[in-house]
Amino acid sequence: MSIRFIAALAAAILAWSATVAASAQEKVSIAALRFVSSSPIFIALDRGYFKEQGLEVEFKFFDAAQPIAVAVAAGDADFGITGLTGGFYNLAGKGALKIIAAQSREEPGYDFVAYLASKKAFDAGFTDPGKFPGKTIAITQTGSTFHYMLGMLSEKRGFKLTDVTLKPLQSIANVTAALKGEQVDGALLPANNAYAAEKAGFAKIIGWVHQETPWQLGALFAGTRVIEQRHAVVEKFVAAYLKACADYADAFLARDAAGKRVFGDKAEALIPIIQKYVQPKPSPEQVKASASYIDPKGRLLVKNIYEQIAWYQAQGMVARDVDAAKILDLSFVKDHLDPPKR
Amino acid sequence: MPEPDVRGAGGVADGSATIAFRGGGFQPQPRRLVPFIVFVLVIGLWQAASWRGWLPDLFMPSPWQIVGAFGDMLHSGTLTRHVGASLSRIALGWLFGTTAGLAVGLAMGIFSVARAGGLPVVSALFPIPKIALLPLFILWFGIGEPSKVATIGFGVFFPTVIAAYTACDSVPRNLIRMGQSFGLPAHAIVWKIVVPGAMPGILAGFRITASIALILVVAAEMIGAEYGIGAFILSAGNLMQTDQLLAGVTLLSLLGLAVSTVLGAVERIVLRWR
View 1 (cartoon, chains in turn orange, green):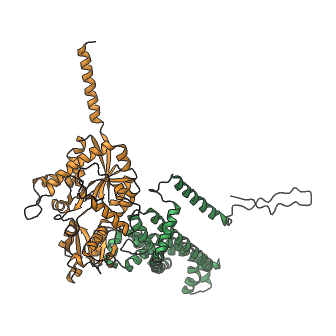
View 2 (cartoon, rainbow over the protein chains, first blue to last red; view 1 turned 90 degrees about the vertical axis):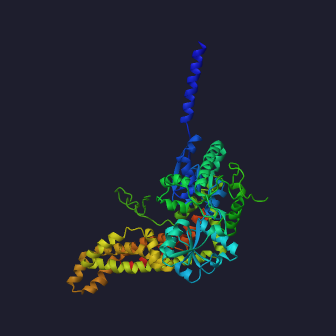
View 3 (cartoon, each protein chain N blue to C red; view 1 turned 180 degrees about the vertical axis):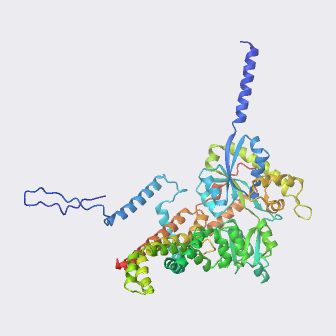
């Protein structure tokens, strides 16, 4: 056999194996909400960042945060991205899932969740987040992020959470209806809904959560079994996710000298991508209003996660044996912020 | 399980062949121990599976953990508050729904005009899921007790109407004709023949509406309830506290058993004429 023939054969085999490698993309799935806050995964898919890493990503959409954590815990999805709730920590505490990177957080200067007073209560003097005691406040669910935000506010402003009457109404639509019908004195609502309520005239924004208590609201997490058995895949996924986070931050988090947010060409370029996946389809203005702060490098406010779990435990909403250290895997993202002192 | 009754199988003195009694059986007999044995077996198997690790904690808490959740509720004194709050909502909602439902249903059973007018309305409104109307109920009735009672009341009303008018239809016509030929006035026929004759159907309807009221208490307490079994189940679900969730569900099914026992007693009294 001539050397030339062997070389040709080797080249052919190489070329064949290369095409096989290219087509044999690793399949992973991620459970998410069709919210603007899920933008990094939409960007990573649309701009081909997942593909660059050799990943074929399937989205599984849900309509609430809870089922996302359940789907990942049950192994129906490999990753999940959503807000951190009491229910999430109870599930994570059983060892089925781990937080690996950051999603939205309340960062000073970035409107995300607002404190609202109903028109009537505002006229009667409910004009400041310090005036929550004695009021009836609508939240979505017990142990929701809104519940925790009120808990943090009570600690910061020095009132007792038990002095506030909480009305869990299960959905944003019901909360809005209760505000509209003057059934409650106030509520906490995401920026988009808060602006709409103020515009319609039945409620007033009396403050923003980022002005009072910045915190880590959402996270990217993975099934514990996925981390153990497909470690390299998780690393690739996080790499693509971080690249998209950087794009997102570049486009949506810019501020001018006065601290006002500015949306330039880069934002305009990303908005159609986000509109493609978010439902109901938002207008460009709504995308900008809902664009929460997401750390450009996916870093978590680690200490705050310890504080969240301690707060839920103190309220009896999260089991005592849940250990923050065991539900965090900080190895996938470099230089997490604000590590707790040991 | 048919069990041949052997009381008739005796020898006969003369030469004719004795034939064993072949009747009996195919008749449900009370077996008081069996339900308990079934319960103990099922719960025992469940607990064993949990101990063995066949049922992971994450997906299904063990019966023992559910008992523990009950213990916590008893200990913290919230059990009576939850049950009390829910019972008053169920009782009020069921009473309102039943009273209105009986009035409309009996009218539809007796008067042709009422039936012609009422049936399409009832048919159109009955299938609307009450949960879908919650935001409207908040605007109409607020987030206090009225909206919760209304949710249960609406849920109970329509099945009661349907049970009442179909029960009127099933009253034997020959009894009514007999009353007429004896010269009974119309109101006496209604009170002495139609209403008692419709009672078995109406009471069967009560069994269904009582269960509907229990089911709807969870939906009703979605609207800003601090206490109540439904509110407890919802918050346990939101927090993924599966042991407490199942403790709440157990509480509901115990209530269902209690209501069914009470209705059984009512049936025995009301239907004594049979």
